[in-house]
Length: 340
Ligand code: FES
Ligand SMILES: [Fe+2]
Image (cartoon, rainbow, N blue to C red):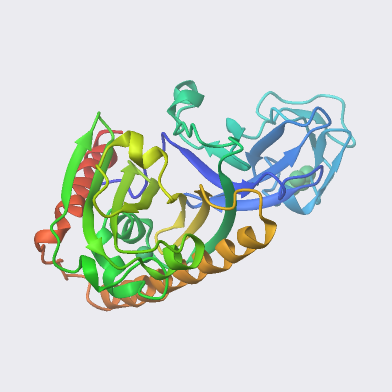
């Protein structure tokens, strides 16, 4: 089975990271060089000169051309060589691979698979993004573990009760069953309502409801590795309808775009859309701190699990009732890995 799903959009940088200079990033075990040409568009080429394989990212960007640091061969943004110092003829094979790029949601997405399949419509559509009712906070982490340990974690609401008591969890959810389902062809959801319980710390901090709440936590993963968590609460007794959820006193939809660097390291780009204090810069900073701290709790645990798996390659996980989302997602991604 392949290690990665190649035909997918993968986040590799924030929009701010990519300027009119060369930036190296690694994904799916391939190094690429990113840069912004004078028209403002982000480009991606393989980070390896055709001549003697010097990393192009160590060279310079000059009038939209990437100049190799070793013998000065120059490539345009499409990867075609346009100058070889000391000779006039440019052979047809003097071309580096380029990759489709999409800039959206303040992130740069790259498509490493078949370029003919790189349809922008395949990136998740986020209707709340850019709406003035929703504030946005952002974080980035690098996890020292396989990407599939993180997708397991992000289709698994059960762990919040035990791992995230300081922010998004409390004891109330421990024994409440989860429902998972396959949505369309490529998305798994897993979630539940936790009714008539005390608000979790982050809700207390930002919405401070007067009494108990009915809290929902619905986790989604669009295979292979686009994840979001819809999390919010209603005063206990309110009907559980989409209409009420749209006007909830507290709701956060947290997106995570996971990008395998290699088998044991993963880029974790994330942002949270919140319906409280949308314009408040201090609240944005506090969200960034809180969510980064929450992801750190996951990172520490998942890296320990990775070490346990590495030391015991024959281990097989034992499934329990709360794993229905994990099992569904594993089957779906295995299928993608086998069929590509
Ligand atoms: S390695 Fe790039 S020009 Fe020689
Ligand atoms: Fe978590």
